[in-house]
Image (cartoon, rainbow, N blue to C red; front, side, top):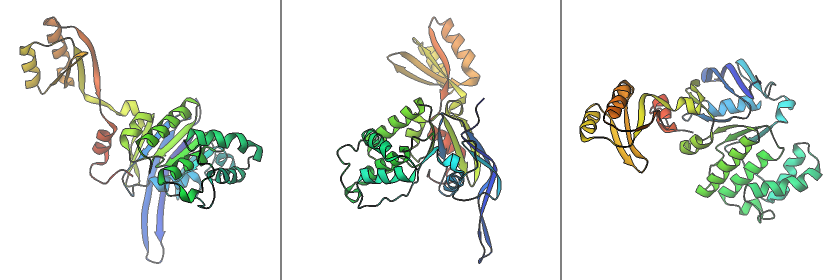
Length: 311
């Protein structure tokens, strides 16, 4: 079995204001893993510890307690940095540069040959839909265009791990779809993506794993498909339902919806067998019985409640 791309073990970080004698815990015994090739969502309210976690895994800060491994190395290790592409939430590029010159500059910072830039940069600008704007100064770019350029910068060194903080911030619906498609393509290539976002519906579409953090503690972590399965409800698809059965199902709290594929009956898990057998006895064909899938928003709200918005 391969080693995790990102691993936090009982990580604790406390910010100390020495002059005021204050200690503010940012992370408390936080533990989670992200495996190679996964697209992982990192969610939580404002002040939950997400930015601190990202700063720790990037090697900007050091943990007070616990252990962190990134691509098998300690945070900040050059061998790890060579494999990471990073897009912070609040970034600023030199406004007097063009996109092409900026990416050439970052190509040099990454220690790559100038010859590599000649082929890589045009491909990246095409991927993020900035073709035709290569020689326009960044100061003339819209917020969405700057965000696209940030994604291109993160991809420049062909990293194995991408750490993205709000990668679709400032983008219109078309731009957000482009980023989703790009992330899906990166997953197909075997890249690992660790992203923070407040757009739960989009995260649900592209992520394999979700980690929810609240008040510095990991409160939910696992594969998306496993976490979104509702344990208390099932969906039964049948060819039809009699008026008598319909009334009985509704009295038990079931929900009935008719569509082109048939009748969808949602019932509590306690009534699954009874309902299916009653439908068979009435001569109806039961096409499938499967667990109801919650939305990521429902999971998030059940986990952190009204503590704060996603950020």
